[in-house]
Length: 346
Image (tube, rainbow, N blue to C red):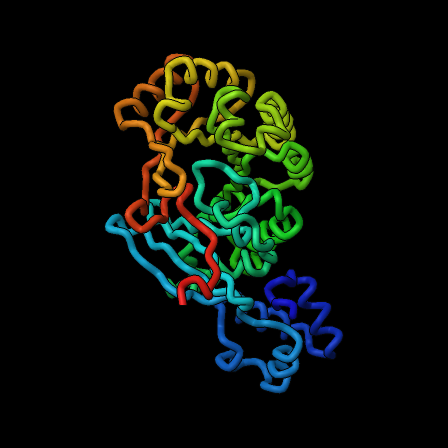
């Protein structure tokens, strides 16, 4: 059964027109969806119409199954989908607003050696409505509205590779930014990819204003192939070339994520190689001391080494910062989100 949130505003208008409903019903229904209301709590729309729609569509494609809050205030959400699968998301609170990390797939098939999300493989793609529902559900949980949003920024960095679920993710990006809905500016949205070159080239033609973030994690193909299987398909040169094309087309600075792994990619030589890659276009390197995933056996670099690596990059005039680790004590930090199935925890 299709989710109502899988429909854009314009598509919803077509559905209601087919049911001979007045045009103002569209905004009434869309407002209710944005507020993530249960069908029986929508009081300004006739019950007869709600019943018709309920027989054909799912109103709320997921619910918060469990939440846990870190000592630093980060909250990890476990969402239950209609088919019984679970996905995770993380709410991070900053001075400038609340950032929600959303998932785009149940699981992941990319196989990165440092990431928990890929341990069970890919179970399925999320629909655009299921991705959007994560934003709307948490906004409602925080008692936010459309005009007074509690979610100000969105990062597509949860479980899954966003560009491996391309069509649903693109539709989500357009729907979440629609001012008739939740209206989150595309400039406040980041999409993280492990580097699907063909999809990056496709993405640059979408006329979006999002921030493209590329999980690079190595300065050369030899190291990258050891930790990221996607490196066997796309070389670092191909990724950098596609990043430059993306920048030229969109004028949007590229962010490169680099998880520092002890003894693997945290040497000065690696910093020097990485600096060479960063020449010739606007970019920023986001350094992440690796967060432990017990099944992987990889260790993050020391704090001292991370700062030394960053300073080495800066000596080469590379813009770089060390990401603040949030939610590590609840396995909500970068690389720690994992796919689960409801039956596994019942």
